[in-house]
Image (cartoon, rainbow, N blue to C red; front, side, top):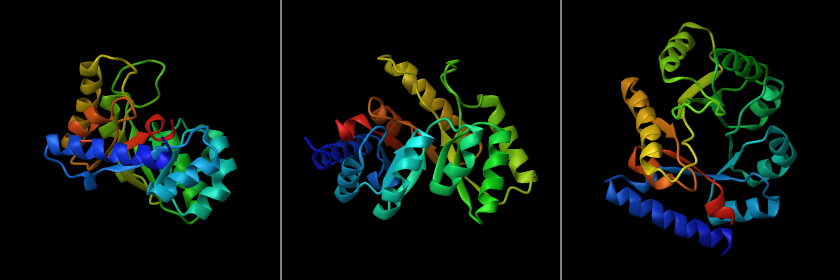
Length: 220
């Protein structure tokens, strides 16, 4: 199947899962993750109705940017953001999902300030506890948000929280990660949760996700 057919099938599955937990499909944004995908495929995705495009590599984002801008899609940077790539990513991305330290937050603010831009960000939380994954510890989130409020970082707009569940067949382990992020959101009275990918988006919806990051299900 092509991207159009894959997207139609995915939307149906999202709607079915939403009905199961009494949620509205309109509450959920599907970000099409286009890592390693050529512009032709991305163009197909946008034509099919996917208005949000996600990239996880800064270099790939830079290479595709002229075409992405032409397509008029909202651009999400979802990968680990290295300090030397902050300026280029802030120049391009509408949303950055992977902010995991005060130092990175500070650099994003000043890059956005130079561009006279308000940068939307998600704080990435490592809810799985896996050492190889980036993200803040649960205990650090509230402190960072408090610090943000007390510092003049007006060019950064906090949008929500993001996490990546472990790659496992253990659905309860996945659910536990998503539940933890939801609990943080509820405790801090937040709104958006960026969680759920091709293999676990149904569980993410059940646990309150508002942003799904989908690659394989759309492009394979």
